Length: 286
Length: 265
Image (cartoon, rainbow over all chains, first blue to last red; front, side, top):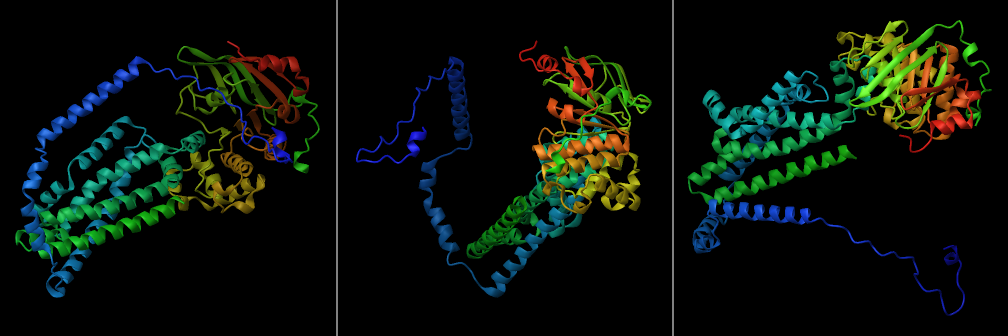
């Protein structure tokens, strides 16, 4: 090997690479693996065949109905860019949507933290408390925010407040689960070290667990803010105000050129929030 | 590197501490995990001011001994007494008379050095004085500073623990153990992850805790050489049973060969 380090003089240079080679031994593959793979493929094909039928998936039908779409789009363009009646209200409504997302996310922090601490194996030692907390999380997660919004509309009337309340409940379920899992994934060493020192579970939570997972918590919080701004659009459709409400209104009035303007605004809003939260999260992880 | 210079081999060993109080007494300790017996009647005494080295191959049970003493593992038989208090046999119910440092150090890396050291005192603080770091009493912060000074890191108090070197972090962990005010310090492979110079520093610190602060120190070590140079007594464990307990100067190659014999069992 060390010979190669010496420059070899003369016209006939040493052969470029005479590295040692060794035949790769054949990998043994059991019949069981192949059978499993075939069964899995068959199941997947069957599932999609069933899905195709159930959703009445039909490309010919789409092709046959193309005029409908063309009509719709020709109504949508040119977009209605009237400042007074469309753009300004649209911008204000975007602000409302953003505010719903912001309030819904921030106000769900205390409840999420409480549920996460009670429902994480890292911090909760009582199995009953743990199971109850997990059940509450699952419930808030399982009920879509739009259903919560419809319920709150009956209490506080149409408007952004109902949207905020709906987001708080749904986001509590989701964020508590994400946070509790972040705590479970953390290194248990420091927890053990303080158990030895006689610290209680509550002390360990405040002095070890929470300080250790702050970066993960913040990253997940920003991610949820991003998602909640998009959810608050949909909440607007059921009357919780914001740009979603304007989109719904313009559709029911057949003003597709206005709708197109609003959709463009939504696009910009979503991209801006997404890029900003992505940038901050990147900073945090660095 | 003056730190690396070993002190002269300890002459005394057992004779030295004859009148010293027994800080840690283990008698007939048994521990099983399912069918497997990990500790089979271990007897061990450590006196105040004594530094012992626990030697043994992987899986010989030396770390388990320490875990039983601090309550990280249940005791299945025998008795453990720390500073005169009987240790309860159930993990979870503990006393705070024995502190422990680990090979993986286990500091809260994002917290400051001082906060980490203060947390050693959590066991004796009510929740009203410990619900947040801002609730820590001033006396505790000052005591923690003194502990940091003891390990030579008082100037790093407000640095993040994670920004220190491995050897410095292990010394912070020792300061945290000191802040626990325990008369017994257990060290589970405290220097296995450190470079030789840092390892010497940590061993020197453990030695000085025994000599100057009269703590009883039991350290699991993987290097017989460190035991020879720093410990008062070397204790060997083979498959959960005591194989020898002697002054480290009396360690022979034959004893070590038996201790680390491959393919046993």
